[in-house]
Length: 327
Image (cartoon, rainbow, N blue to C red; front, top):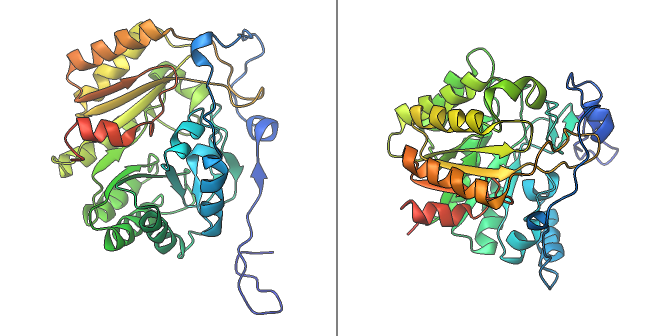
């Protein structure tokens, strides 16, 4: 059945395309991990679950409006902490990604067209939850001519219309493809976010294994080009450690981000979502994360969140507040 097919009642129904997870998703990835070590999680990786049922309560609220959080789809280790505080990072444009990144737990397949009801549903949910800062992200949508930029802009506009005091951070895909960055930046120029975030994810030598379909320099250029248009809007990026990178390579990635005028950075430990995904090659210690934070501040980042359980959206409101965005 196609997304435009109708049942006998005449009401359109939305039908997902093919959906691949775990082994099925990674099977066609060119990365090979047979010789990788099997490591036990160190004590500093353990996550204590808070009391109460805030997670299930918030999930129910989101399902009522057909909304999805990246917290759930990407198996984030901080989901219980964030949900217990009533915060979440909303994932728009569906639950199916057009890429097969070896680190990511989001399903691969053929996604549906953007849902026109999603922006108003998101806006109403933000209002109902009385949020002051949200992060909006999405899967990669290589099937769309603008990479999904128009849908991001519509979400920004509708959320602000119902929540005038809201601060919005968007965590965007790379808009890779002929003319896509130009189209995306032109669309977002009319509805710029309060923070523009795009993750570098890893160091340049590991891109082929970790981010097939992406390009290191392309991601840096996207961040720099947005900043050149919106000098007053902070830019942000994030990288994961434990995929086989060296300290020297991480330092270079941080320098590259600063040279492309990125203001904020998150640095966290990669955790393997399933046995079929990219293995953890090494667990970086808390002391090493602290050292990277110190190096990041020396480079000139306005805010550095560096720690084993740090993720792109983890304490995003706090980093925005410390950087002067949220008051």
